[in-house]
Length: 498
Image (cartoon, rainbow, N blue to C red):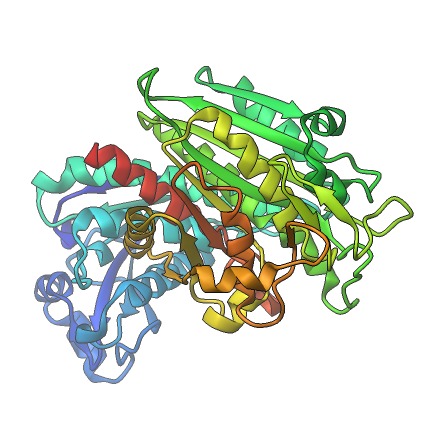
């Protein structure tokens, strides 16, 4: 898809379609009102007849509108003007793009970026229009024998901004929006691939390709033999049950000053999670291919940062393994020694994400990081706490947590902070090791983060639990691409504020 920005009057646009907004009840936006005057009241007359009320998501496609150069005019219902926020704006853009794609308008000039969204400027609106457009048109059909596609798909959108002074900011917004959207799409692709294709080896191959395509990127992989030599007993306790070898994958992007400390992202990459010996129920187990959502999202965010060419040093570490039951698999009650030297009693082999992550979090200390952010589909408990609307954030550093929460608000990829107070740590007590890998049913997301916090004492760290936000169920089953927008916005903010 091709995107651009311009500043102009709607009646002068020679294009396949002009997109204008209508508020409820039957109230034209300022641009639509201007357009209506040029057409001698053509639009307002139609609205008076009751063809469109202006409710959120309503559409009306018009042909042969007088005094215009456009083949069509698409009116989009924007709901009540005072209630127009981030979510409503995204729904409006999505409905417009879907309608354009379905009705044969291969290009369009869109004036919806001029809507007054609470607290958002033109740059934000253009950037999120691009991200929403790409998300709306995303389709995972690469494994189907016949790909589905529109007969005359939408190929070009021009977003209008109120003044020419905003064109340069709009162009930068498009660049960021495309990069982030591509990162989101990569994340979705990785998550939507089945476990027999997207193995730890496959993710490693994708990481090597990323390095091959970019001079500032290097990729390295540590295999199980080397992990054993390094003392990663927690990681190995998970991967040893599978015939698929586990891999610790490191992607290093050097975009900043040579001596600048790196931002480090760590992703949980369990490419399929049966639960191990603590076997999961069979219902919906197919969704456990999504248990590498943390790895997929840090990979997608890294790709976006590279595409934008941001002047930062970024190191991404992916702990990739498959959790399977076998004669070699860990048993409940086993005690393993982590890379940090701390011992762990495995009470439940389905609490495996924290086992691969704890060794990865110990490993990344070697990079002398500025901050470390791990992302994981770690606990079902976070869904009980926050549902499927927000990711959970836990951190040992208040400013880092604050910056991530703000980035999530900016990116419309929101999160909520949960505590990791010392009082919760005792739930991890074990009679036979330094700690157990399970804290009981109460505060499960918090005790999981408390477990990880024991391996992050040497640096500023935050944990993002995306078990509730990483994928959709039901008819729209598939990866969401979260929290790629949050992570990339955080890194963009670091660049802007440095």
